[in-house]
Image (cartoon, rainbow, N blue to C red; front, side, top):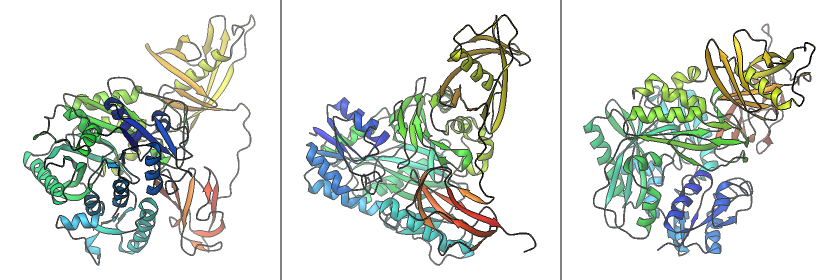
Length: 619
């Protein structure tokens, strides 16, 4: 029996495993980087061991340090979570060699399936070689790891070599393995997967299907179980192929077999030899705890001959600190408040007041709704997200709500190109013109100390706010009757420092208001209070390239030097932040007149990276 378990991971998944351990009476050990010294998973565990450093390479990817931490803390088992070392066969062997219980499949199974090239070979699939125009588009993919790292779509033959080099570099940084391969890129397909769970007694469960087609940068955003709209024959094929993959490697524990479904056929993609981020939807539908079952299997217990029956439908949305309207740029800062109402499951690695840093994935939380039908589950989840309080960095919350309510998703007709087609519409601003007024009235009430009115008529008070890129000016007066806005057709019903009730056109609406510095949250809207006398704006030369987020410069284009001629759209350098790589391209055709970036440089948001002086038309 396992008595003390170390989770070789961080954030949301570490907290989720700890929750199950607490229910089973198992003591827990966390490992943490210096950046995670006060993180929720560090505070939640019964014991915590420091891994010196902040980057994943220094900390969570150091298997030797993690094993030492487990032994030092008296753990007798290790759970890898997902990401980091979860699909590293050498790490699994090191855990076993140290006399610890490994909560995962045999190292040999990891070795075979963690390499996508070996897995595809096992399933009888051969990657294309000598790619020609007729083969396009193709997908360059890292052989190790997942999460969209080391993955590139190639639509032009002349781009292939550059994308291969970029994918190899990113895969080497993320997984310590730069091997990549090429596969046909199937447009308009759905990403469907099958959860498997196997014990050491020969029983293998296939636990339904999941649809994970809504993706950005090849990373999943919304997942659901079961996958809607599959024929009975296709479901049988998916389960048979998943069972075949699991049995082929003598699989033990929880794993996922992933497919691309197109034209009524299932195309094998890979097998993930670990727990998936989206496992809660399977848990909800089957009424099980997959982590508890992982632990039971590792302890040698047998599964029941048949899995439990599926009931209802579950949908999960990943809440990220990112700005979808700005190429999914990750965001950092203080998470002041996170609360999601309703009958939903919230898995998170953050609490109010925690800092979202630059070193790790920008996932804030997973929100899961379960209901008797798909339509009810989708409606419940969309409503819970819309009513959620999320005060802090910009998030994808509004995108999630709109995605769930989009007709294509509502009718189960989505595919992996969903955001390519609809992102502009899904991120279009939808400001409430009364939100700035509510912000101003709440602020005025919070600052008033003398009743706010005089015998003589007062001059109008003016406040300015920025919302969705547009500036708003609000005017109001202090009177005997209270605060009176200079806004036609709007009546103030109630106001205090945190709550404003306005009536417009006969409709009464309540606005909850919170302010942190110059950032004001009014319901689901985020406003920036502008100073009364703004400082002159910082001027940058035309063609300046500014860092869109804090991060690390990981690459500069080969041979790029000051004085070089560059073309509009040409990639100049690559910035990595929160497990995502961002390409910084030339804004115009011209001459590179300044270059302030070099590999390894840490930059803050807005930092000047380079300047491109445009060529004159007559040159």
